[in-house]
Amino acid sequence: MESAITRDKAFELLKQYNKEPFHIQHALTVEGVMKWYANELGFGQEEDYWGITGLLHDIDFELYPEKHCQKAPELLRAGGIGEDMIRSVCSHGYGICSDVRPEHEMEKVLFAADELTGLIGAAALMRPSKSVQDMKLSSVRKKFKDKKFAAGCSRDIISQGAENLGWELNELLEKTILAMRSCEDQIRQEMQKYEQ
Image (cartoon, rainbow, N blue to C red; front, side):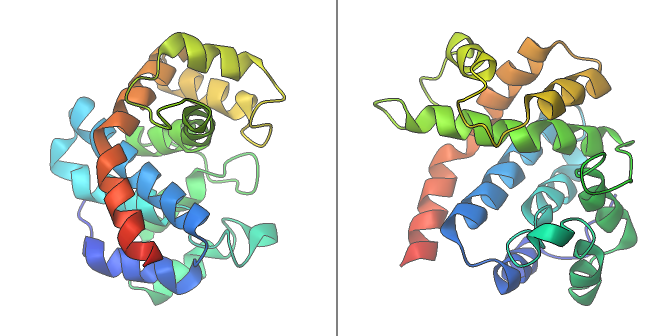
């Protein structure tokens, strides 16, 4: 899988349709997590492709929340994104706002990790460190069970995502914590630049 667009161009494309720091940070987080997973799961040569797909996965959400994953193909095509990546972006909304089923390993990871990064990120903000670096699996499990905490993050989708990958839920939680640790500092720096 070749990425037909550079990372810099992909980030410019994202910023064309997304201005909210929250959405930019989520995109950068999912990008970093996807790159970590690409290497972890033996797809290191596709790291950029996985990362850019993660970066652009919510491209239409800020402007068209009611048409999430429906408006994305048009915006992505206009930005020169290939059909493979467009398919992958749409697959992360499977069963919610899209009927494109995640099939490639990367699509399954994106589906599983997208909601979960939100839950782990919210849990990190509750910690004195405001960081995932000292986050433990047990505290994420606790937040996962508390349906009132980060109520917008669907537990069903996270569980279904683990199932699609053939993993236990704990494995998905643990790996995603590690993935978020790997990119936390870089995202912080990038957000400082973005917010200047």
